[in-house]
Image (cartoon, rainbow, N blue to C red; front, side):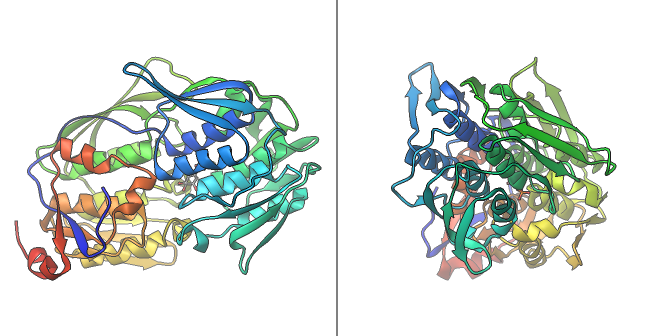
Length: 464
Ligand code: S3P
């Protein structure tokens, strides 16, 4: 669903959500499957890949780097085939690479191409052009890659790679799977062993997939700093093309899960949800809030676990979420805030500094959006405090999404449990991660309506 700039899209209170949904492919894994398949030898088949704006741009980038990728779709089969070029086999791009809205696409790609003796220009959309790239450029510079960027390390970037990268040992200064992955992909193109020390755990899809494709990569506790791990990868090893089933994205599933939890009378079943333990903390957190969730893991599946989640309407209670939990749920705070807004009591979410550097400044966007919908919230340093309404929220606001998909989806869902409708100023961004969000939500019973700017004031004052 794209949106006419002169209209505002509203979600309205609904009676219940019911039904089954097959969750769309995991975004993080889809980017990685495309990139790692491209530098493997032989053929890689990807089933269940997320076909969203972000991942299709990564696919275009790989094609621009000389990789042949095609779609095989018949009445009973649907997969993508990559004819990999092997480590060191990518070609100089003759076009500017535009990764759109995707921080993951951009940062991983920077690592991937840093070990090639060619130049490439990388750009992105208005949101990505504001996001910091120095966190990736700094370690890659240390390995020998050179960059020219806009002041402040911003896109567009000119990347001057080298086929002579030096392996490094790098301690991550921010908890970031993107930075870790960029260094590991660069390390794979260097002569020797590259090590990343991770003081705080982040998602491990790059490690899992590299190992699934046959790479020698070791992750172990790092004795010198308690609680941290060290990941080591050997450079210039061969990866072998594989068949991958991409599980559904838990970060997309959780939007509909919270929608069911806060909407009276709801019961929904979500199939094929990725249950990588480093992504599943949000389900545990919702359970701590009193969520009626059943998580059933399916029989062994490769390369990562999947399962079915049943979510039923629940009376949620406020909790305190510690700073240690932040990196494992970093994409989930917009929708967790919606759960907290409907819960009983004061929820405190700690250590959210990284939320400022996402597709928008999410800390600020959540705070402003909630207050506009009659839910009191405060920012204290890096903590977000939400005073839940213990039931329906007032609603009746038009949210500025800052072109951020997760802010748009989160506030549309809050509209299901509000007294007056909630509108969002842009929904185009949703196609970056969950192109079927409207179709899936409507199938479960959600209702959305477009209003002309001139109708907005009277519509938001409507009470259900
Ligand atoms: C991602 C890592 C996270 C996350 C992003 C996806 C990944 O970003 O927010 O949506 O696939 O590696 P950071 O690495 O910046 O924390």
